[in-house]
Amino acid sequence: MTDSLGILKPGYAISESEIQKTIFNIFKQAQGRVIVTTFSTTIARLQHTINACEKFNRKLALIGRSMINNFNVCAELGYIKVPPGMIMDIRETDKLSPEKVCVLSTGSQGEDNAALARMARDEHPMLRLQGGDSVLFSSKPIPGNEDSVQDLIAKLSRKGVEVYMYKEFDLHVSGHACHEDLKLLFSLARPDYLMPIHGDHFMLRKVGELGMKMGIPFEKNLLVENNRIIELASNSINVTEELVGEGYILVDGTGVGSVSELVLEERRQMATQGSLVLVLLVNKSKKLVGGPEIISRGFVYMKSTTGLFDEMKEVIKKEYNAIDLDPKSSSYWSDLRNKLRNATREFVYSRTEKDPVVIPVVIQV
Image (cartoon, rainbow, N blue to C red):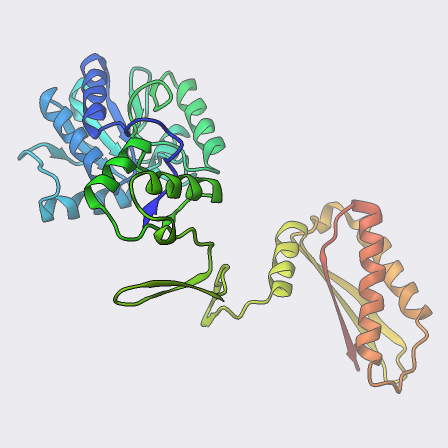
């Protein structure tokens, strides 16, 4: 099974050794503190930063929970080599000259609550950025995060921070094999079967075509759609017609996969539009004797919009008194609530262009 996302890129993927050279060059010219942000699971990048600190005589501090945890685990297991005395507490960095400090930080994807974003907003309690600092984005934005990363870079720029990123410098290498990497893999591994994965259909097909050029027969080149079941035997592989289900499985409290789309839509509506609870008191003759009282949550601030709610109460009263339903019907109460709900939603939308969740509560006294 071969990753296909890089098949359209000619040549070979850049080596991690090129990243080390770039980091050395930036450290060499940096006058102030250097903050390196990357994925905390990119072990090679952690070692590159350690090597740069050792070469240019800087202490290294860690900031961000995942960075601290992953760094410590890697050090304990021997995946990274940390010279004795290099690591310092982030709270002690102010005691050193800026040119003696390096910080490894989370937040390379522009995450709002990550350490780097909080530093950019002057909200981090342990470190404040200043003019003369350098920030290295040793990563590439994940698709969908581009705007967040660019917004973070703009905030850093306003603070006078020197920003280095992959678009201008070799600070990130792809984790996906390019065209020549795949050719080398096929020539070394000489697989009996090839199944391209991780890419769109065009990319999968291109990997399959490359595999056939490298000697993998057409009948052993499996172009398989998502959800298709593949049966593996000792001497054969069979692509079945059977499909498995896909999609998100939502965990809601103790329930797994039990949240309906209707429930989700109600939650989205309440989150974006708010909710209104209408409380009415009626006697045994179904005559309105109290209310309606309106409870607003996340809709509008009631004290500043008393006129709107007064009008809403009149609309609800008028609708209730005009309702012509059979009180003996088994659906009387549900029909009544639906009419009150619809009348309220229509009025609210006409006045505010908002559509909150409306919950009528009719209490018989």
